Length: 557
Image (cartoon, rainbow, N blue to C red; front, side):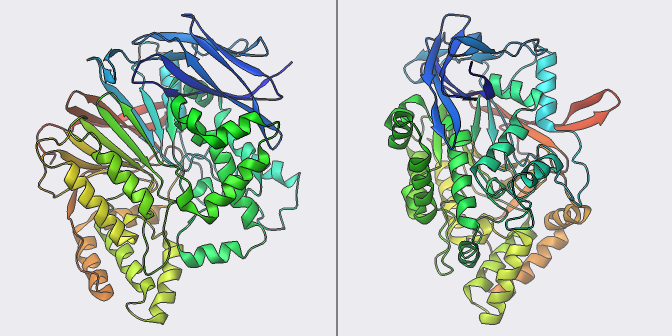
């Protein structure tokens, strides 16, 4: 009898017709996975195999638009979800009401909850201490306890869903039982099987498992999904490729991301057009085709697209790959390669005037604390050689030690993104808001560029979901936002001969430190932002709202 090893995860919900969704599961053997809904909708799919593991992405059709229905999962006809004696409410699929082809009906609008950087458990031997209450876990507990609570329509996980280079005590012990940790890569993930352990540790948490079964989620990777500072520079890549363990690590990282995260980002129509997915489903063992794909993705990043677009009625989301699509040659560094940059531009401008809100999901923030922005631009100039070879070597060392690799570290890409946001946000066809949603930097803030525009423009940054941060780093971020930080940044600019940024901006909210989630509530041409932090008390953990603010009213102070 087949058993459910992981999942179910509710992934794609169709906002065009309100009639379909996809459910991802992992089983412990080959089988037919089936989803049955209380309203008669359902679907089934045969599992596919990768590296001895068995997965299915089940298309669910026949759903009723504008309704919520409970569902169950069966493997070879036997019910495996909900779990026996579960204390959680039934897992459900909620669909939007639609008013016609391609248009969502008027209603409560769209609620998008987002964040990044979630370690399921603190790493063994770490110096940062306990991580405190998990914001995602706390959200799940609140929703499970209150059936009337308003749920997000979609959960955006903006990177570092797993930490391949910072293992918990339990996972480290599990890996130590299968290989010698004294050999490279040591207490880090080495292969596909070890990656699966990270997902089990993260997604088998009871609250998280229930939450992901009932709230649709969309994902994109950041560096720790593979390794800290992944693709930070050309020299970094050359050094990693020279190690005996890196090839297995990068292939396993990309393969597991494709299976556990990327597939569910795609709509059923996109899956039907995906040749790799069809090949893997048609073969008894898809390991080698997927491994060849991962090798191609690493060697020739421009041949693979991890970015994707989702339209939710009159809200457009562009989730952008800011890691694998980089150009790293020092004389032509770019956050996005030319084809990826054109994809972003084309999808931002396609149907311009036909959407009310544009969300750009970027794991790395576009607008950073000014001191950090200037330091990264200065560092990029040093590494490019503007101050000679000695400073270039110093710059490369600083880049890796200080994580100087955000949009500011790719000045041409920063300028291009700024120009695109200004173009989209200006004129009679402009949406009400253009928001860049980001994480990575272990604090939350709201920043607004000083750009004459029709739309309201925002950088909304929220992290971590569950992690910790050194006091010194907190002080550094506070300095980065301060007047003194701006003054120090100008010194970096003079030394690096970089000039001033093509845009100025101001922080209009934060910084906030803690385990936290942001939620955007979008209705018509209005937008409201809420920030919730997880706090422990004697009764457990609860979410505390520290910001609840209208974004489309008068300018924030």
